[in-house]
Amino acid sequence: MKLSPADEALLSLLREDARMPTAAVARRLQLSRTTVQSRIERLERSGVIAGYTVRVDDQHERERIRALIMITVFPKQAPAVVEALRQLPGVRALHSVNGAWDLVAMAVVATIGGMDELTDRIGALDGVERTTSTLLLSTKFER
Image (tube, rainbow, N blue to C red; front, top):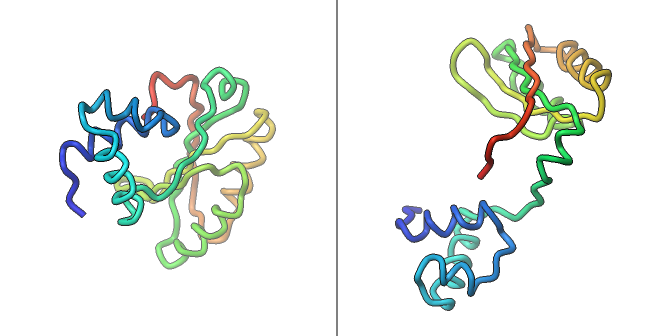
């Protein structure tokens, strides 16, 4: 689906606050409320908007240990590794990437010990060749 500039602006506002009232979105975009509502419905129907979620305040997240875990996998075992990572509750997101690594996992746990345990579990998965982790200190902005 090709998105118009108005659709892109609408998605940007919804990324900031998906609970923003339709009337407020319409005012910010200088569109009618009906137009905004119909665009949202169209974006939902077409699958561009796949769902809505909760973003936790950075102050709360700061109390948790967050890391990016770069993972190299043996190619034929990549699907099994992805499925095994999906089952680990500390892994919030998983991205395939190009370059020296095959996957990058966003991990969030309560303690340093928990992160140590999680990275050990990831490294021990069948098909994982090696991992490297980096801790996230703060989020400057998120959309």
